[in-house]
Length: 284
Image (cartoon, rainbow, N blue to C red; front, top):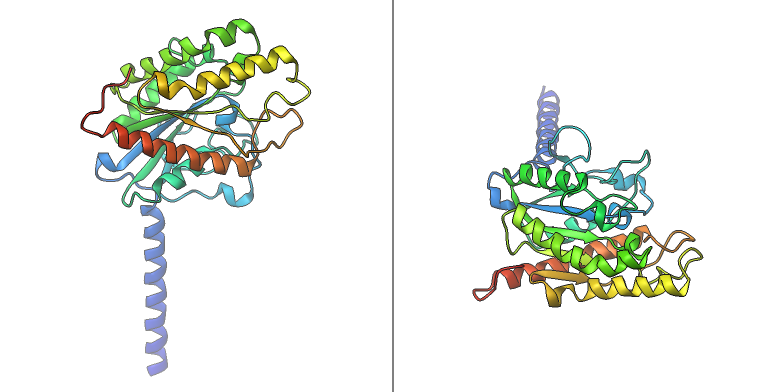
C-alpha cells in the first residue's frame, strides 16, 4: 500500500512538472500583457537580409520570446524559427533571429516581434514608398503597432544598386527618403534605422570584379557608412571578418549572419540610448 501511494505521488509530481514545462513553453511565445514590452522590428532589404546561410535542424526550433509575422497568409503572430523569409521551398538562415537573441539578453520581460519583408535581388526602387513591398511592410507594421511598439528597422541592401551608374548615383537620395517615409508613415520621427555594410568580399568574385563595378560597390559602401552622419538616429554595421558560402562572393554564410545579428543589436541599442537623451533632436 505504501509503495502504491509513493508511486502515485511520484506520478503526480511528474505530471505536474510536465504540465509546468508545457505552460512555460506556451508562455515563451505569448504576446506580453503590456504593449511596451513587445518590441517589433522590420527586416528590410534584399537577399542578405533574407539570408543565405545553411539552415541546420536545430535552427528550425522556435526561439523563446521571439515571434514573427509570416510573409504570406493571415496576419497573426507565430513562434519564430529559421527561415524567417520562406518564399522559396528551402529558405535560408539570416541575421534576424541572431539579432533578436542578442537584443533580448539584457531585457527581461520583453518579447521581440520580427516582420520579415526583404526581397532577394531587389534594388531600392522596388522597396521604397509607392511599391507593393513597401506597402506590405507598412500594413504589417501598423498591424503590429496595435499590439506592440515598433522599435526600429534593420536594413541590409545595396548590392543590386551597384549594377548601373544611374542606380548608384541615385542611391543616397533614395535611401534618405526611404528613412523619412518610414518615419512619417509609422508616426515616429526618431524611429531607429540600422544599415549593414555590403560584404567586404563583394566585388572580388568572378561576376563583379570589373573595375567599374568595384567603383560602384565602394560608392554604395560609402553611402551606407556615412548615413549616421547625415540622418539622425541611424546606425551603421560593419561586415568586417565575415565570409561567403558561394563562389559568387555576394552572400554571407551562417556563422557570419550570427556575427552580423549581434552587431545590429549592439548598434541599435546605442541609437536607442541616444534617442532617449533629454536633448535628442527629432529624426529627419
